[in-house]
Image (cartoon, rainbow, N blue to C red; front, side, top):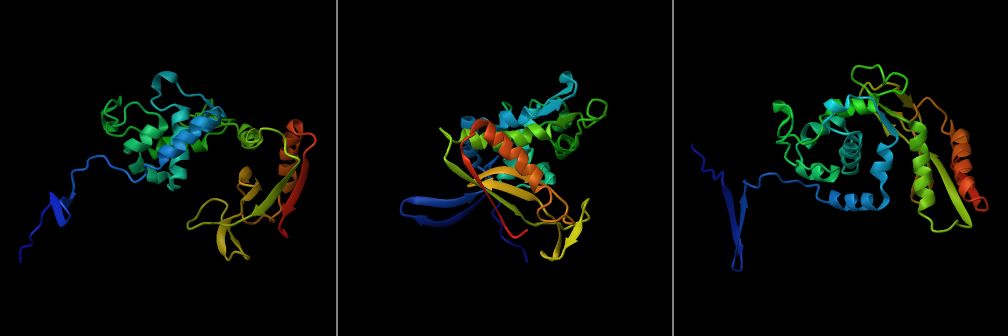
Length: 256
């Protein structure tokens, strides 16, 4: 039996004098328009520029299509919009709205150098993967992973953003420490079973002051919940004391 299909449009009951129909010729559309609000916030605090400055790029400038700032922005906006996995960028690299957030002028990718890249304004997952895996001690000589992050600079940036959020030093602040589970669903490196959470997971350490994140340290689940907390506190409190010598600092943590 033959079916009757209308591939061009679907017609629905009208709304007063208005016709209601569904069409399939929308072209480049996205469900991530809310990212434009994030871009406005970044323009105010300059987070992505400052985060990109924490990387050293050893690539040949004449062979670069995606700057470090573009790569960092693509990854950060993707995470903020709920795309946590790198393989999501197989599709996201075609997204013109994400390209707009990143700051690309060629929103459709039609001006890319290589023919096979045209139609994709953003970087592929392999390029983003090299961004995340580059190491300072080998980036200058590595064939592919030639971008290295300064993790100490990233740590300082989180605290700097917190300090800059105040017009004047507060009389008192609370630093909250806690560990939580980050469940794993494959054979990831450093995978351990945690008896309390009853799953294979990582056990990252977080330090907050109110809504401000001051530290996010990824750890394997075979660590004690408090592992490394003293070192992180010494670093954070020292940075705060340099700016706010008279502010009272209260440390709060769970039973761990």
